[in-house]
Length: 474
Image 1 (cartoon, rainbow, N blue to C red):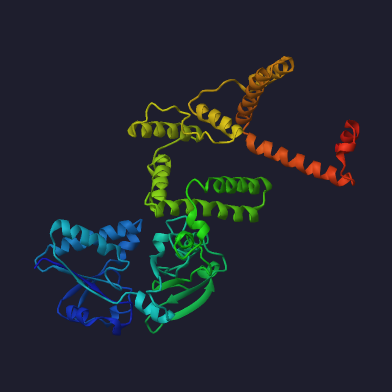
Image 2: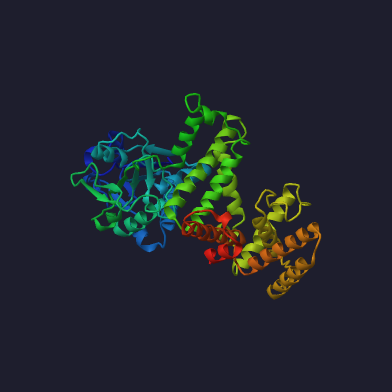
């Protein structure tokens, strides 16, 4: 009858072919193989007529094209009265893209499918490694990982990565993995697991593309030695907030943590300004702890969870970057900024906030220089500019003259505020961050004053007149 039978051939050794698979293969006259280059093929019943799809790999531009062609062929054969038997390496539902496609389409086309299970590559690899799969093992496809920039792997647990079948794949794979793991990170290459030609190689990550590899090669990625994953760090913070944790952390609320969050943010900025990468690494960790702690407070109060935080910002970034994820053409940065503001306006409209000001999204609690810069940047995105660069300097000069003449303290404060705002607008046009620039000036002042303190051995500055202080400062 019309039916698709999918047989798992096991990892490679003839003795690993299941009894059910052998009975099936001895009762039929022909079988379609995804690839004839599998160690067990030579031990199949001699009466079998073998068809393979190896030629499709050479004729197609992408693996997607290969898998689609194979699946469509099997679906058509499965509609015949005699049906079709399709045999794949390992287990039909472990790393077999053609099988997933066949199952999906067969269900829609109402073609019965029978799965005859086989031993996957996982079990003999675990035997070769003497590793228990339930100890957090992640199983992944090297080809999927190489499509990423950052590896989708939890570094606190090991990973078994299949289809590291040549040096090109291994090279692309290591470049992605080294975005998260050290170059010297220890890994294990298991080739031909469970077969007579099984080999095990312990190498550093950077060297995996220097080894001899075959279609039966799997990479075992060992975990990092310390907690390094986002999930692991969340557990640390959750433990601090738990009944068995820290009394101080348990007492904290969103409000009590406000100053901690602000202080850690400024310490990050200080590390950036100093160009100190070791300090930046540490301060980013401190800032991350505040973000995760704030989220854990929300979890404990039933307000929201970390997946809500991450999914919302991830969706927002992808929605506001259609030129990256939706194929929109842009001519440059100006188009990106214009699209960003257009999308934000549409979001406000959909959320019933269309009447909000363009400036409403800028926090009122920002430092004044940063807030002024943000105002200028926000209105500049829609083409609103107060004055040209040369005119801004003329305005500063006018304000300075007016400040000299002003006698009323309130008038002086008004003019000074306008002059500072104008200077920030000038800084924005000249692509200078006024907050960082002033902070650097503060640092220079502090450094120079400390030098002056060291030069004045007595430290009694109140005993010096203005001229002496000026000479000491110079």
